[in-house]
Length: 155
Length: 155
DNA sequence: TACTACAATGCATAATTATGCAATATTTAT
DNA sequence: ATAAATATTGCATAATTATGCATTGTAGTA
Image (cartoon, rainbow over all chains, first blue to last red; front, side):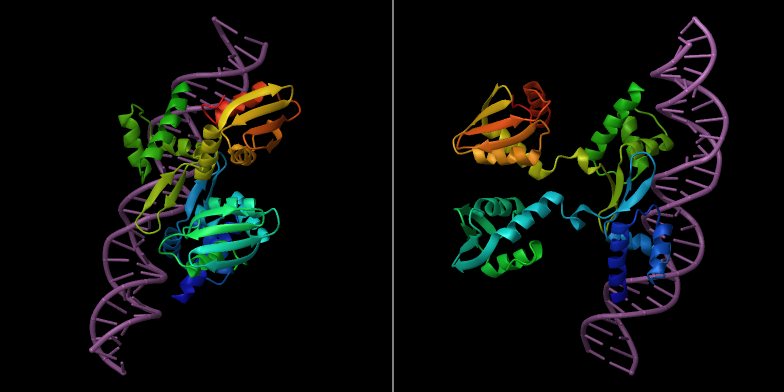
């Protein structure tokens, strides 16, 4: 069971870091990582991982992880904006007050909009301060947890 | 030849609008659209179209178009910002003056940044006006054409 | 501890897809 | 107009992948 978890994780890494054209290729790479399984098991693993097999258009095919396993480049950029801009977050009831570096409130606010965290109903930016309104039914803990997940190192 | 072009286009539509689990299924749908080809030809078509076969995680598999065939949701959002915000565009040499609805210049300007039109070297926003600088070698016609392509209904 | 229920796995093979090759169709060059 | 070059296609089948079934492994419960 735990073995499978490790194997799935390894499969993801291998697919991310190699151009894998067939399950046989992947089986060999897995073997090198210490996992001995049959093609049948691997097929089931790939299914569970939502791995797709994609054509490059002319020369061949390769396996690819689902999009959700990659954060898009623009999303990374917004996450960076948020990480570099935010100084502190404090709450008063359902209003959160985010202090940012001077002049950064707008871009951080915009980034939060784009990231569309479900816990945030709305936000408004000054120069170095953002007010955010928690969505009904959401707590500050929900939002902080969402931050931890989506935007590591911001608490 | 032209026949193939039409067929590829039809294949894309069918994949977009149906959950297709096998090439046989797609062959049948193509037949209904008046295209009679073999599985071999379809496999080559799908390869050329960079179509992938993806797992949904547990119940089965389906064909999917490459990402570039879909405009991302956030890009759609920016396109909307631009479409709804812009009132007029006029040029003086290599400077374009965009009039927007009041208070919308910033978001339209930001959206144009994100959309990264190659014709725009830079832009700066006021409240309801944006100045854009054409990249060297680009004309206002180039930009207007780019608008037509990327942002329909904005001239 | 023993039993039950569920998850994981391999074997064998069915299902699905990709490809080599030859033929045909289309485009390009003369 | 004709020949050469290139693209497309079907046939047959090789390659690849998915799955039914039985077995094994694991977790949960009495």
